[in-house]
Length: 438
Image (cartoon, rainbow, N blue to C red; front, side, top):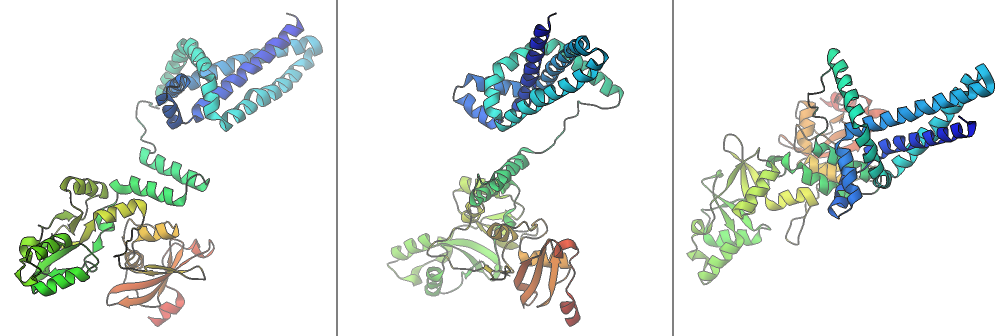
């Protein structure tokens, strides 16, 4: 064979090697979501890409087979040419030259282009790739069968499904990466994360605790009861009788006003128990997703949360659930509660009742909320005791200082992010000054 023809075959082989290497990279890195969107818009090439991605194992095997075939063939031809030209030294020359050509032009360059523009390259080469996958299928099937047989002899089974990363975690990871790359705003990331976590967060994490729920004694004189309802910033007020734990109904402000108008404005004629709606109790373990669906089915906006013993723990509303997705919602009737106050030195003063989820969202932190719902609860859990004022603890990369305490409840804390050197110790230990006071 003439040397010019040999060189032409070598160049063509390197071009094919580049094609197979780039195809494997592009079709492996192509976005399935983007291909699906293009497929829905009628792009026939996207249909081919989706089909190839669906047979990823066979695709990779076919591309590897094609790449190895042309690489070995071109190396053999190059060795023959170099032997004719330089004798025994031709083997080394062919090895060096072909290694450089294949690595640079047959592997690195096509894979670099493919990884930079995976979707564009995948759409461009999909028809050709499908052709090679089809003609290589018999050989690929035989090779895969042989590989599985050898693995089975070695005790490795490929039939067991690997759970891997869940779709939920994959979506959250993708959004976090896009946020770090600047393509997704923090508020959008928080909204998306809040939506995905609705099925994991119980209502007890977002409810208004019983200590903060405004209750009205149903046995109050009607005039006083109406005055309290009007002065309240809330439209739905639980009514109790005899004992605050004995909730007999939910008084809606609109129902109260309608009844008051029907009574000619005479509050003494009102029968509050007849106006109130029946209370709705839900277990504290109910997820936000299930509770949201229940709100939609019942066409109501609030429910009382009870523990396993049936004791009322708080109140959850539709607004509480929506706030988990879109963030804090306030109107002109809401009471301003400053639960998080930034300090000039980088520290943050936090009310003990602020939930960890709200603090993480406000400060873009990652404090764990598995063991406790509030910041005070987290400190008590980590300290294994109820701390005293001025006592400080260091854990999870932050220093927590108790500023104020009311009875057995931590009312306010000062939280300071620690440097990497300071946060090296994981165990929550009180500082020496606080320990000396004890």
